Length: 327
Image 1 (tube, rainbow, N blue to C red):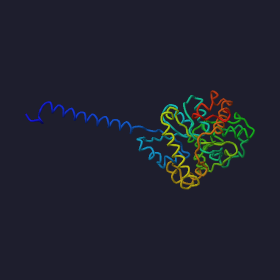
Image 2 (cartoon, rainbow, N blue to C red):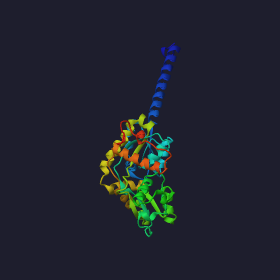
Image 3 (tube, rainbow, N blue to C red):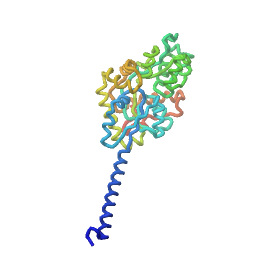
Image 4 (tube, one colour):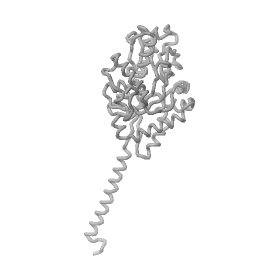
């Protein structure tokens, strides 16, 4: 009997081959599992996060770690944070008001960073031939806005400045696309909206800006994460912030170049996109006690107006070590 046909040797060789296949299979499974990790980002038709998506820089940064990036578009901040609350996304960007409404609804989120103020990037607009000339003229009128968005607070503050109460106008809660349709049909008298929808209304249908946020509100853009994700993958969250900071340094002052990259993402023409880009703010920063205190003031106003069901503490949604200036 040949050594190579000996039954014991054949069994040992067969076992070695099977073991090798098993090792390859386990290695392949582990590799596949590593490649299956996905960072889920929610974005809107606004701001530098959309520009980051257009450029693909984050995908390049995370690919060596086996992390894919899935982008999901939302019509506005409240809807985006609802997605974060139910576990559909891990990270996203919104304005000042949406996280307050989300926190009041029990969302487990954490503020990560913010852009500098951009007060001219949101405004109340009226039809170009409207008889409404001042904010005070809005008394008794129908005003469309997305409930819980930044423009909700803008409207509150503009009315206050004009000597009106929030109850002095008839608020009509509509998402941007429906609000524009109502605005064009004359079903509402005014519309409180943000860029690029604001820029599109100005350029495409001649909407007239009645008042913007300058001197009234800050209009910060915030980056937020689901707290469980931020606790589990702080390195990935930091990678997003690093890429946004690098992008900010490139984009500041380059309105035309930014618009050229954003226009295809937004589905808007270059003139509209460039107008919106001119009103962006660049220079991402960690949440400061001062900005957190400003958020607390907004939350307190919303509670006083009974727009949120309970009082909240912004400090509960801040990263460890960050408190409001009043604490």
